[in-house]
Amino acid sequence: METNTALELLKNIREATFQNAAPLPSKESSQAVWQGLGFQLGGIRLTAAMGDVVEILKLPKLAGLPVVKSWMLGIANVRGRLIPIVDLHEYFGLTPTLPRSQWRVLVVEDQELVAGLLVEQSHGIQHFIDESFEPPGDSDLGQLRSHVSGAFRQGGRVFYQLDIQSILQAERFFDVAETTN
Image (tube, rainbow, N blue to C red; front, top):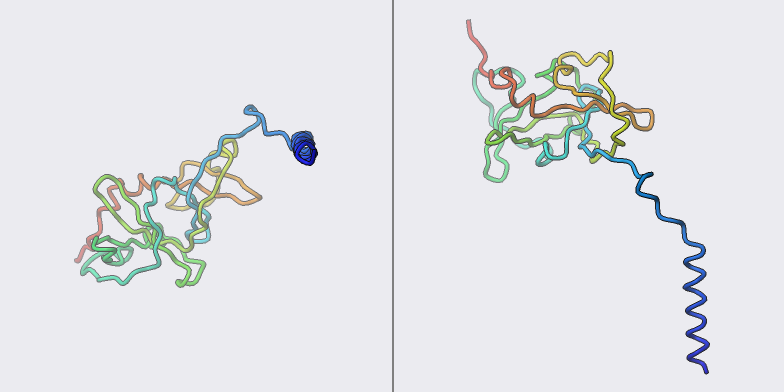
């Protein structure tokens, strides 16, 4: 008799659970989401596609290089790989807005090219609703503009989508030698 009572009690709990449960969202109401890595450069919030950034590091020890442009900071040994480190502030002519202790290096790859891009701060993984993507507008992005494909608005903030691959493929990115007169 006790077994039937316990069994009936469990059935009642099950029924009450299903009656009070919140419904799952319908497939039509779900929204497509774009994920990217958020970071800051010269006070401008940016995001890059998840697949573009391989790793995020604190600024490693650098070996300086002679007769290179000021934005080429040097070479770092990262787990046995020699990686050139580029200061994106200098490269794009931006003024840093945060202390150097918060700066991070985004390790990026394009086929066989590997580079470290120094940025002010990492904001971690960001999720944006696809529908929030818009053209970059008239914002003052300076030299960044040619590498920005659009912007996402989220919570009153704007994250500009930076095309890392276009930076790595730019002719200027390979022109590191300082010309001496």
